[in-house]
Image (cartoon, rainbow, N blue to C red; front, side, top):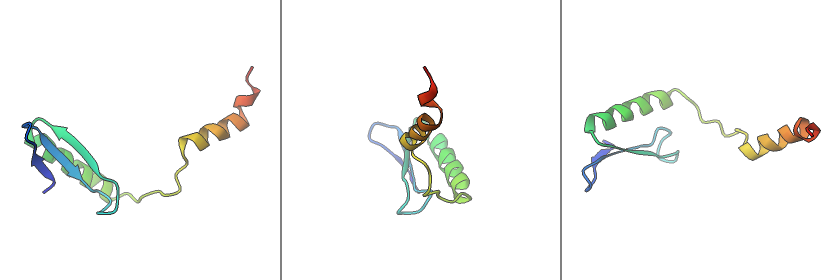
Length: 74
């Protein structure tokens, strides 16, 4: 169970949708039901998707845009 109560009284949802070595997603909620619902939604949505390790970074994307179009602007 990845939903736990914090000393402040809030509920923390801590999920690992890509497994133990993948990205961790944490979010705080006021109500336990919201936290459990968020956990189920995350685990269902990410279980069907593969990780794209070939994603382009934003800086590379901006650099490519500048080379193709940005330098022609006045």
